[in-house]
Length: 485
Image (cartoon, rainbow, N blue to C red):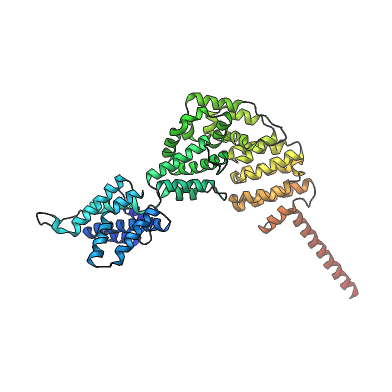
């Protein structure tokens, strides 16, 4: 049973601000025990909502909705005359049919809402009973009617299925597209009816897995990447719905080219709804693809898609299904490993970077390791940060690498989650670096630490020297004064 809090949450999600007060009135009637008034108010909210949505669609340019709006305005102009009341009754009697026609609800929803109208008529027309008895509405019926109205109609926007699909495609193909999961969920999932949700999720799954033709609106691979991001956002809401959508199109997966399968693996290699729908032959085929030798210049980063696939090594779920991942990653050059780590930073890569900081044998390698450490900043603990900075300070190739002073400042910022506790750790690092080389090294980090209340050792020493010189000068001046006396 839907609880009180659940009902109040649904009321807060009513699409139309003009209809929401009517729903709140129905809820107050129910809680006050005015059951008949509550049912009547619920139907009033349903009727007002359908009218409001059809008018909104008319204003949005829908030709058929404009015809309805014209008929509505004609009835309204007649006012409370007999003809006006008769015209409005005729409109109200066809509202549910109109709602089905414009895809605001389906036929099953219409049956549920029809029960509300029937009970409303029983509540306001007591003479409908042949025995003359007054209809006694039950509280649970009034509550159920309100929840039904909220669930199937009142909380959903006036968007038709076909038009909604067009809007989803337009969003994905928009030149200003931004992968914002919360926006995708709120716009194309949260307040839609189940059928509309399924249609959109299935469309996203087809494009993401099969790289379907976009009719020139966007390159197929780019569209598939964006659709994959949307599918992952939908999976956060309903993973089983996504699993079902993938199952409907996975039958075409075996016929895809190797590059297409590789890209699909990059998108979904750690998702259960992908692997659960693959047959054993396709699983083995993907394992073979991953096990093939990685080509490329050792001193150049890997291509983005290759790096993304190998970055799956961070996932125990993916490693279990693709055993070659660990071997392939271990055999990469330092530069190639760094390109993988930067693609998908993860705590899994922290030990690798710590080792690279210790073992770097060139300025270039040291700089690469430092850049990778910056990317892993949000995943470091105080202990791993201390270990990393110690290895950095003790390895000349890291200390002397040109990118490292800037990387130190960036690392301080990316480890912000560690709070004030990291400040003395960076202070120790700066002290070691300056003791091992130029005492003016890492000036930017020194300024950052000063701004956070930590005075670097070299500046302490300078301050002590200035103080000592000042004291000595004062003593000399005092001595001179004594001699003059």
